[in-house]
Length: 121
Image (cartoon, rainbow, N blue to C red):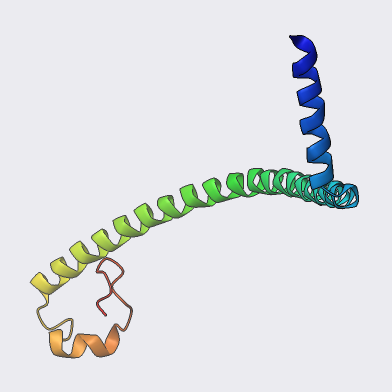
């Protein structure tokens, strides 16, 4: 029983060989090797870039976190200073009502944007 199966499989394999051109198979194999080489080169380049980016991020993240803490500290300090200035201004206005111009002329003196309010477009 094994002999007829073996003969049938050999006959089928011979038929498949006649369906496919050997030169086409060699050409496909060569193209696959070229593509594999290019993909391996691309993978190596990307790996090196990822290592470089990781090192750069490690360097920058320390500076970024330090500068963020510094900016938060500066904002807290400025908030405290402006709070004190407002209280001093209110005390001066209570004592000397004419010390500061009224609201209609105050815009001419202070042209700084109010950073606490969101910009409306």
